Image (cartoon, rainbow, N blue to C red):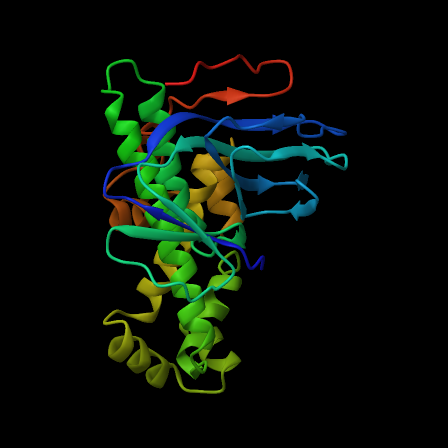
Length: 293
């Protein structure tokens, strides 16, 4: 994890500039550029990107988030593989910006802190905010000011995930936390209460009691909620069919997946995907100049 941290004041919301989703082919490199006062968030979906900021080189892979500051030359220093996809978002800060090499840099309730590079843990939470931003920014019927609040929400979410990761690293891992993390890692598999209980050498009844005590839910409900979060990410970041996603997440059949998805989100997978359809997509051939606000 890179040690440099940026603290943004949000007494006023950040000012949105431009954003999109970029699809890079084999051999792509980021163009040589200097941002004129605007910051850029560079968030990886798949593949790999290699960006040099000043003299420092960053190798980015899935779910990595890089903050590129203004007035510093940045350029791709190595070819990317095929199927490299990332979100890019430019914004102007709404207040003062402070930099530090201290991860424990204190912040107030109207400030956020984001490291120059870190890996997003709850990516499905972030991707929903990003798609809301892209949908809003590309809908002519939505007031332009709404994009300022969406980009500010993204900064707040990134800050929350970063500070939570720091706090968790100082805590001793409990057995229950290990169980939850194991479920998240194996969410693509066919999971059952018996299988998880056997993995951690406990009875299914005791496992269910743990989830009731610490999460106020059942083991099955927790498993399904994790799978649905994964499904939301796949719906918004891939063109896979609903049937393919159900299969990838080891649901017994598509009908059962549809029922659980609606039970958790109150939407069908199709309605969820279509809610964020106005996204600006670009690649090397389609990259128009966007005027500064």
